[in-house]
Amino acid sequence: MTRLACLPMYDWPEERARVDALWQEMRHRMGTDPVLPAALTRPADDAALLALWRNPALILGQTCWGPLSLGLLPGLTVLAQPDYSDVPGGDGPFYRSALLARAGSKDTPAPAPAPEAGQGDALPDGLLSSKCLAFNARHSLSGWLALARDLGSDPAAAAESVLETGSHRAAIRAVAAGRADIAAVDCRTWALAQQHEPCARALVVIGWTAARPGLPFVTGAATDASTVARLREVLIGMGCHPPARENP
Image (cartoon, rainbow, N blue to C red):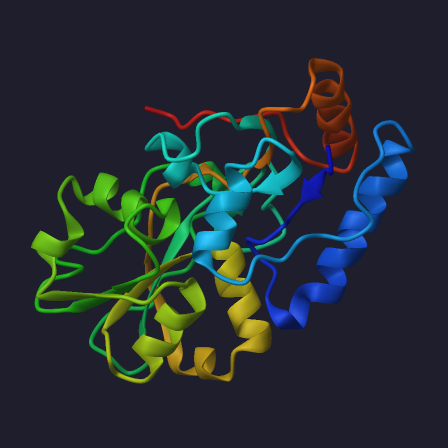
């Protein structure tokens, strides 16, 4: 069986050298048993990515707890959680979504809650009232489901309108361009946008979702138990955390 690997969740064009270097470090630490693919697979579109996540030959990937919790990715084994402590809104294996609006709006900017403040949300009252919400996908934890859980209602019912963009980066651009008023993006994506997306300078954070487990590393159904254990050992040795559970 030809093994496959992908690390698509933060694989922006500007970050691909860093992502490739991360993969090579993982391969080096794993050694030669099992033989890991020399290069990452980069699916051409969302359909190809979904097929790759469902491919039993996937030896290492990264996905979102949204489709995992909805049962859209059966057969995957969660290996470990990356650490988010290096970005505002992150705390070990947990991350928050930043709620973004255009600078100069009537909304008050909100700093990231400190870890000692607890894991609850920090959302302003009436967040979506009379607003258009841009989001990447309805199965996304950071872009949709986290907001729905914190609001206790369907965001589409709370907002005046919604705009599905297909990616966090496109949602950020939609808000900056005035095609939407608010977007929810995970804290690491927001950090990347501030480095690489010029329009991010026109945005401010006006709230934060509750802290939830970040994007896990996973492996496919054909990966044997000893390899699962070895992959988990290597990832934790690189600073990752054991699989996390969302607090009630």
